[in-house]
Length: 68
Image (tube, rainbow, N blue to C red; front, top):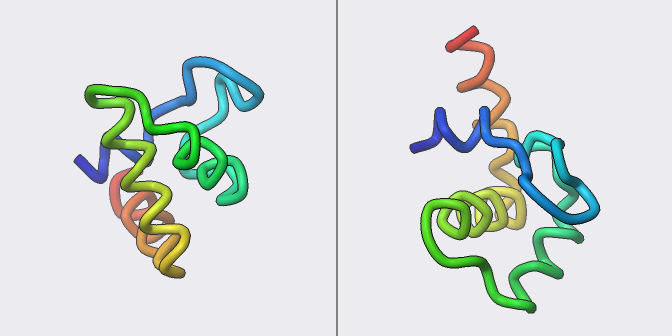
């Protein structure tokens, strides 16, 4: 799941085409207030939000480096 998160692109909105791991936490916070979408995308976005708001973003970059 985390590998999917680091490779997933935002499919719509202001950050369409941007890797979700690069989306600013402020935008993820806004999405969380609106309600995360249903399904896999919602799970990816909510997980990215939790990781970033808890200061664990470095884990995504380490995982990405290991799987290139």
